[in-house]
Image 1 (tube, rainbow, N blue to C red):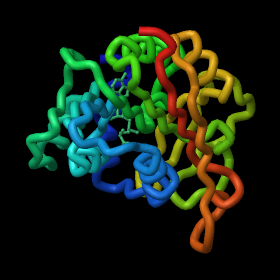
Image 2 (image 1 turned 90 degrees about the vertical axis):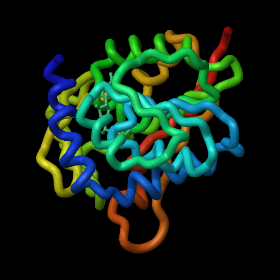
Image 3 (image 1 turned 90 degrees about the horizontal axis):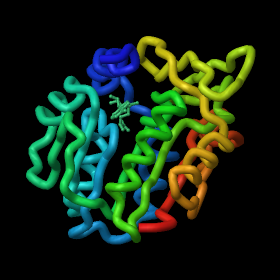
Length: 227
Ligand SMILES: C[S@@+](CC[C@H](N)C(=O)[O-])C[C@H]1O[C@@H](n2cnc3c(N)ncnc32)[C@H](O)[C@@H]1O
């Protein structure tokens, strides 16, 4: 197990218990759900599913859900919390299916860009030709902004793969990786994808801080260029 794997294996219980992020739901998951067609009978993969909160939403939409996470603790908690035969949680990346949709929520920010490229190349083979990958990550410009749900400290030098001290409300601090928009775009295109849409959701109304002006999240919807 690498240091990074160990980190999320040990953080996951705290993430599940303590981190209820309003911005993840309002400016992340729900925006993704609005982009989706009817998922009935669609086969989907929740890659880096954590303890399965988004997987459970997908299963309520009648998708056949496969959920994978490297962390065995995440999969154990996900199984304990889930009573739904439409979801299969797994700690092993070993699928016979090709997927209509692959969701990657707040996972690529946990990876060095070399791992990001490796994983995107792998996921390419598991996506149907007319399928889509939807990636949700903290926005590259979110550093130093005051958000209600999280704070990502801006380091002195903001360069690709810079380690970012991250504070999710209620949790101990940990480090994520920083990727620029150009990094995402280059890696996606080099892995054979085309970018169909980029969404940078802003908040409206009271009870928000910098979310009204600076999007806390970025969403990429991408598809394959060849079989
Ligand atoms: C911030 S959590 C997000 C969990 C979930 N997707 C969500 O939206 O709540 C990041 C998750 O990515 C997982 N992860 C990190 N690197 C991974 C990899 N290479 N393969 C699979 N899962 C990975 C971690 O174990 C952790 O559960």
